[in-house]
Image (cartoon, rainbow, N blue to C red):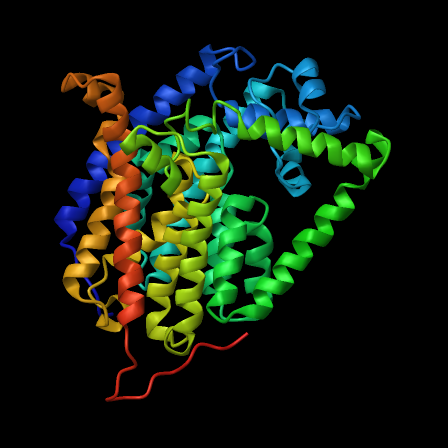
Length: 426
């Protein structure tokens, strides 16, 4: 196998340190989960509680979880159930077999297992040999990274949608690629950009098949809500009110949140401004549209297998920077980060300096020490400075990596010395 070779002693040192940190982190979470009233304001596992567990309970009780007023009145939640598709509730339905605290423990352990599996799969997709040591090293590093920690603390199911995105990006046949698109679309913030961009890169059929399946299944699952609301019109009004409420939510509004890593949030944090929803849409459209145009114009080159690495990294970076994303979504960058460690990344077509700079930017985003409150306190930073260091630097690192990879895609050329096998078209 060509590519980077890391001495085993280095892996053992890294794995040992990451394992110790991971165990301490998990122990802290278990203690918090056991000793905290999960139904109290500010309780732990808030995303699992509010967007996973109680929306399903609402459906079982014959209520529409998208109805913000009714949802808040009926359940001990701290945030609305946003406009996630009903497939999101299907994914969380099995947790109704347990009461909330037990269900949150189950979710925690499933996420830990998911991190190990996703790390192993990313290593395999990156053409690294799977060994217990490499899997242990990567998975423990993911656990202590910003993306891993935030996933585990909030109870998010992001790993499932990331796995769907990876399948959509890497599957060699249309069928499995379509399944990947369908799974990724359970969370619009990941699925929509991925679907658009893989279509722009020439994978039209998997994008269309997966999107149509997601629309069809969601439409069928929405039928009970139509009856409960009293018709299509009233349901549309409920969904519209939900969208308005969510856009102004303290978890999303740039005036109140420091948990976003997308381009609009980075601009807001660094320049101390709060772009309007319109401006945020324009910023997202520029990144997504620009990336789609670049992929479309370069599709005759990037459809060749050695350059799949480059396409995967570019699409993941454009996805996480274009529209609303929080720190837990950084787990989307597991595969791109591992790919960039390879000396033969994109068949060596990307200059080593560019590759290392992009890799360094992703490592800064994933392991920004200023995301740890004690580090910010140690340097005596003001609240404003601490937020810029924690959130602004993370987002800026992602934009730097996106710019470098986009530049590499724009300049890549077909080699003239030997033929290249094209990836199977779909």
